[in-house]
Amino acid sequence: MFLTNVWPRQTLPPLLLSTVTAATGVTVLAWATYNETLPVVYGMMALTGYGIGMSFSPGTLHGLAYFPELKETIQCIVTFAVPLGGTVGLTLMATVFNSKGGLGGNDARAGIMWAFVAVTPILWGSVVATTFLGNVWIRPLLDGGHDVVHGAWFWSLCTGKKLQKERIVRRNHDDS
Image (cartoon, rainbow, N blue to C red; front, side, top):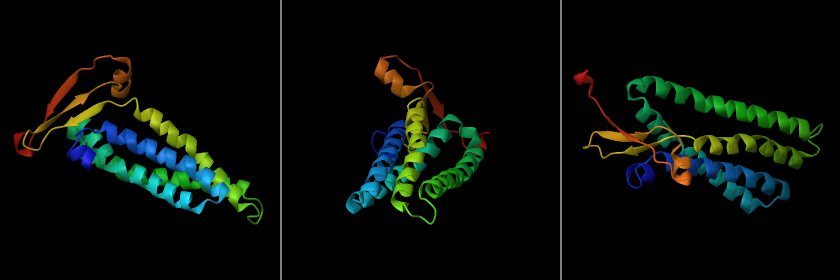
């Protein structure tokens, strides 16, 4: 909330931070479960939960900024995608756990570790995908709009390429 409402009032930095945080948490969680370091397990579970939860608001704001006339569609997609992603991830982890855990769960520790390892590439893939998004500058409410950049904003910062900002002004339903 701070990153989108106070500073820097953008959507890409919190999205990138959240994906990196979640991916790092799950990566270290795989190691920590195998080595049975309980304090690290608790810390990485909290870090992963923070990263996943932190992406909800900026992700929705990002979509709404690019497609302001599709509010209901974006909300529907987000409402559908969150449980679907959880279901796919849990199914993948359960399948790997049952496969690697051995018959009767003889090696449950290895099964849990491999289950986390199985979802790690998906999370790091989301980090890479996030770097190819544009960015949105959220203006104060009284200002009545926001600026968007089409193109890979993160990579434009790295390469020094200049991208054009486009100003989008909110319309009231009465104006249409």
